[in-house]
Length: 495
Image (cartoon, rainbow, N blue to C red; front, side, top):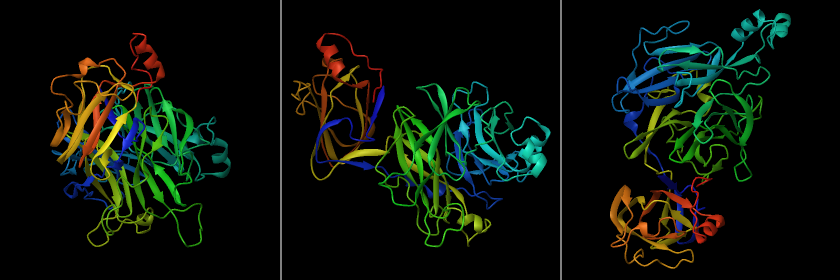
């Protein structure tokens, strides 16, 4: 089963009156979480279902330098409370009952829930440790890159080690001493967002090319421990307003696509620049997508999750980080601040009235609801590129409470196939479903399975989010093969 999402109009050969639109996640105010002990930056939430307890858990970080890992739990993923674990003693001082781990003089995250976990430790995060601890190790190691500098000049702020923290259960953490992605002459600027690519069977880390360089780069690893092959992925282009910067991009595997939450910063200032780079401004989220997890396209370049009203969490910064599937919805959890980026640091994390300087917020989105097709006015129509149904099944995710959608199958030359025409179809009308079958009164897709056809759709007052089926969009070789009575290989670079 493959899912055809409308990230773009690539698969449409012809259209009339069709508009491609971006979905809009709905804020769930009741799911807002504030750490009860700290006004620090509650950042990089990772939400998952704990199999042992059946509870929803959330890991997050309350600060950098030191990096402090905290936990929360919930029965429903909406109403959260601190995860009380007095039995867990992190390095150094335990700051609160839900304090799980500390990395001195470091910042990093978000967390990575490794679906493969060949090392038996599915919870991981990358971090960069600077200053004293790095110098202390270098002083004792004559082979260290920093040894001579430390012995001759002392601690330098640019000394850094790239570390990986790991855990079997998300609660008890340790630094993986054998993880070897440390390149002392280079270290990125966190956040460090990881995902698994089943197409390459590798782990990917999304980071920035360097300290203060706000573009998108990636590294790869076969085991999530030994990382290498830093490569440039994306940067603002001429269509972006001057001052646009990319702060990070958490990636999630969704159906047969990779979805990127591209944190888009607008850093500019009329004041004279008196530091290395611009630091203040709002951050929202744009959508990016990839069919292979390596090559990325940006969507309509509008905020997918825009900043909220002034004075509320998310008015200054909104970092969508974690996404979970809940029945017919996707729930997205984000770090949020009412202040502009870095402005919250200058306030030393003090409250402004009843509004804390940071919170974790949640939004809900319809399943497949990233993008959709709609009509610009009354009826719209499109016909696809040549395609084949490898199995006789097709469903649609669509919303038409006061509209209708009709379907027909044509041959390669757009001639309707008898029995599979608009007149023969059972229309999707006055309906709202994520998995409605596409079918006809007397004929089925079995009549055309394995053949090169086109799907034609006519609709009004409706949103079309996705089709699901064993679909294969054909090229000219597929046409030649079927003309010669040979089967189609539907596995190569599909979608």
